[in-house]
Image (cartoon, rainbow, N blue to C red):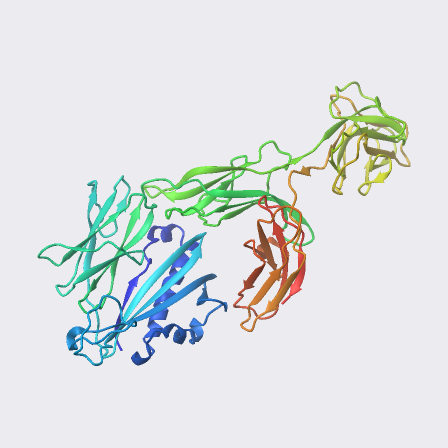
Length: 615
């Protein structure tokens, strides 16, 4: 049984992209869709002609390679990591060569009927439509096969498809693969079809155009005009195929048309923030900056770049690399307390000369953190109810350095009294300028206390070597969260001299040369959502698993959820919508997986992990 497949795909639609970014996800997705449509039509030929009917989709789904995956509403097939939604339609054509008969709803539309043919089912047309979502946009590929019962070759061939004119008029360097870089509003194409053709069907990217084709009087040349005003730049496929009086559609010819007239818009819906993730092991988190954005609608976008506040490219990391990823992780972000936290996101395209160029940037400023810095100063305002331990000295937010002061005993420094509603991070770093002028080493222990009562983080121990001279010694106290000390409350930093220390152990403060100070841990400007309270995993017979969870209550609003499979490393995660169910269609599954879930806000603050749950 012979047939001719009408292929109106987009194999050439990304011709230039393939040369520069062969592995781009968009190209792989479209190639996968085109190959899947071709496979479906090839398999439809294996079904006996008499059994090709409106239920052909159900017959095709019985083939192992075309079985629905994952199971669910509609016909969906997993290929190359993409989920394709498949629709197959069939209709009947009555060939007038043996007369016309009566038609019902199974016949292709716009056919004449008659009474001369008792068996008018002569030809069957099968149409495969593949739809998928990539880079935030919906795409479609459509292919057609015409099946005959007698095995004869069907359809008329067209030839010579080319661009013949433009409005306004401009030069056409390559009419069979034109590039339009000027302010042209209309493109007119022509194709040659046999005299027996009653119409020519024109298409753009596999979509039939509503504009009727026009035949030049007395010739076999047919023309089609495409208005490109308002059309996104990019590469398109223009196709043409001849149609006979009996409704048989012949094979298609197509050419790529590249539009390069303007730059893409700045990326939209950018969101981002600081986050702590597991990078190389699950024993320690790394603070990073994360950004995500919406895909540009323009078809000429070939990638995105992200620059950090200092202007360095952080994603994809190299000017020679093109990536259509819609997210970025900066593994070396600025400090949360830095004065500049503004990132730039740009879309990339190819200009008229073929060089990679950048569109306008979207600026996005991360929400950082606040931190109080207290200078150490002699006691001036301590009361009997605060700073009761050891010699009392003040930590002032503002202080004019004076002369050096030395101390040979343990001391405690107190902050200014807190106001109503003021909060601090119960942690931070003391930078103390210390000297040991004696011949013995001197151990010193630092402690952080609130109001002389509440114990803070674990003490930090340091040791001064003998005859060390003046050195800046850091005592980093781990943060134990945000606290509200209360009106008049004070934060206290204790330095306790150990065995071996004597009057030659010196602490310098209030000096412009050695200004000892205490800086509280950064207090984030935003908080993470609460984690989902529960996660369940239900394995399915086909090897997939359905994950369900409960939305958290309270906390920051949830923007989306993150699923982690077989570990907490960032490489094992993927984002899912703000829903409470997900189907994990791991087609290579050889056993159960373990899953975790987190909730993420629009500022990328991520909740704690819920899990592991095995299934």
